[in-house]
Length: 168
Image 1 (cartoon, rainbow, N blue to C red):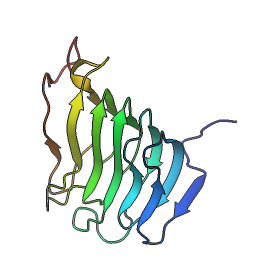
Image 2 (cartoon, rainbow, N blue to C red):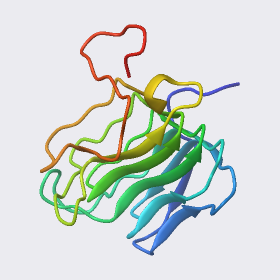
Image 3 (cartoon, rainbow, N blue to C red):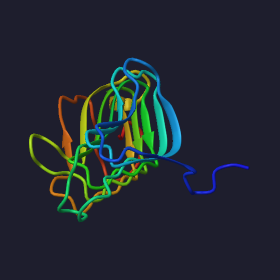
């Protein structure tokens, strides 16, 4: 009868390399737990149109803020979105780039190991087609990690503390 705030399917990767992989294809995934993937919880390079919503790709071994493993979500492409996802205790919670990228209401607490440019969120490059600056980024939570966010190779990006026309 619909989503009830509890993911009904859990993929227990048991510390193997990757959880969910889709290279050069659109990936649409909603309401999944993908636990303890050693390298990537989700790996979707070249996934134009990919929509990831309500995924939990956390590393559950060790202590929040001191233990980091692999990457939560890696996605690139045109019109990709990552919304309402959780990626805790990851060297990188999210690596995302492309055209018209949406990153909203995600939880990256305890991610961001700081080694080799690994932040809770690695963002860029993005380019614009329909979205100003190519990015809609809001409502994301950070904390208890070592490095929060890395923004690189971006242009025409307007970062502000209030929503408005042309603000990312």
